[in-house]
Image 1: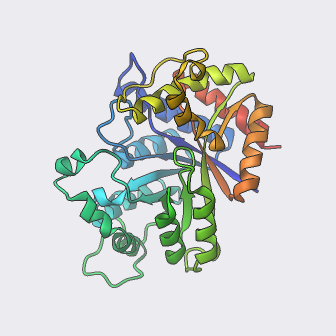
Image 2: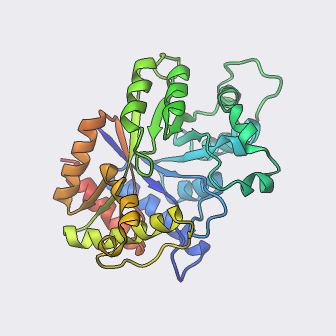
Image 3: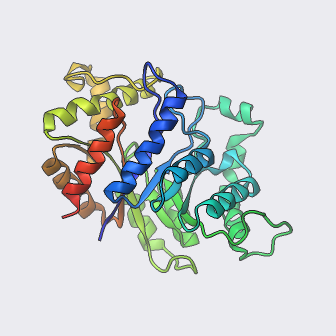
Length: 327
């Protein structure tokens, strides 16, 4: 049985502020829980006007208080930005607040441009070199499976589910070597999808935490009553992505009719590359697109991104999609 989950960037809409985005994040987490999704994840991004989810552990606590059963996670924490001890304390605290509901996905990218290293007082390129070591150390701080000179309190003994995130072969191979579940960011970087999943599965070493490979893939999802309505709603995220890739990021804009058709060929190509991991349309269209992607990847889980300018439209999108998929 395939599990379905929700990925939220906590978008800040044009005409609105960060407080609105955080309130809407709590409402989205509750809607995901009510619709039967397995997880609600936020991601670490920095210095981006249109994204309010940078302080992942704080946003997760907010989402946890708005829900009661759905798993709450970071998809993910960009570990080179941090030291393992601080993350162990944060996620140990989250597990104490929401026992048995916390996921920790770990990534190697910084989540922002080079200037972030200056702001963090870190050499992020060098910190990334220590990523495998830091992953092992962080896991040990929670599990106690290594004899470390310091104890994370809270942290040690926390029941946190670990995931490795990736968009290339590096994360796949590291997840396989450490016996971790693996989530691939196919919603924005699908180029190495098939190769990465094959590498992860072929090189997987069972661990005391996971006895066989476990794969999550990401898709962009917008579901509405008709294909035309879903296409219109999805244009907000399309505008944001094109602006990001062309160096002009900003807040999430209102939808624009026939947006993709209005673009020059170079900009349209940016979006066309993402269509492999995209399900936009009516419930029937979404069911076919998601089913085809699951068949291609053999994924155990699918996590859906897909911001809409109207927060209620995304909540309805999740409800309609789950009704179509849960048959």
